Length: 233
Image 1 (spheres, rainbow, N blue to C red):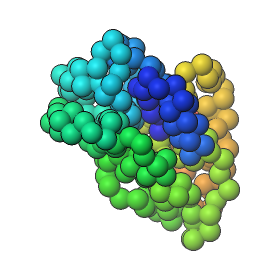
Image 2: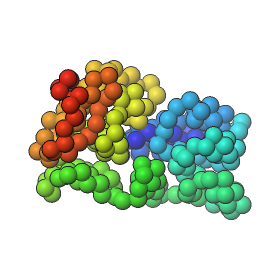
Image 3: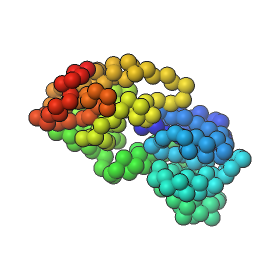
Image 4: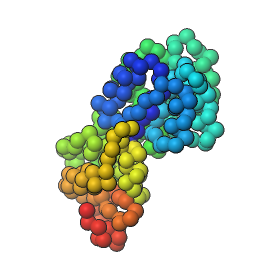
């Protein structure tokens, strides 16, 4: 899951970035509204954390521009505790949630989990796929109640595939949702991540099918795809 933070307070932005990255998210940050608007027009994210008091272009203007593009990107707005009118205006413009400063990081992390689940198409904290169970809150995958030993990157990759189960996911989509700015990930690296995750999923009967030229698809045991045999990676 990839998150954009639009916050001009560098100390707060750094704290949020560090906290969310430790929780397995790919996080990018900008410090003004124009930069936020520009990035949102050209790149994909799973969540926007938006300060309303941004310079050059206000958070409300960024939000309005985003919704005018018919984007359904979940937005969590940050605002001063006394700006009730701004909070109401933000929600009316299409924000999904808000938090008043100051706030506890643990509460923000919980709201981030809720919003990214909602953006992925549902509010359930537990995703089941055959014998595989993925807890989005604890960010742990289990098979027959036994936790799989997955790295943070493998957890993120699994989440991407699970939220698109039964559909093709290409390497470009994986990079877009797995990596933050300045992080160069080659096509070979993606293949390595998929290979490692595939091996660890074998006990669950869930497999990652590779369709040459298209990408990857998460499948349950017993479901076959005639294209997969063309590329067993």
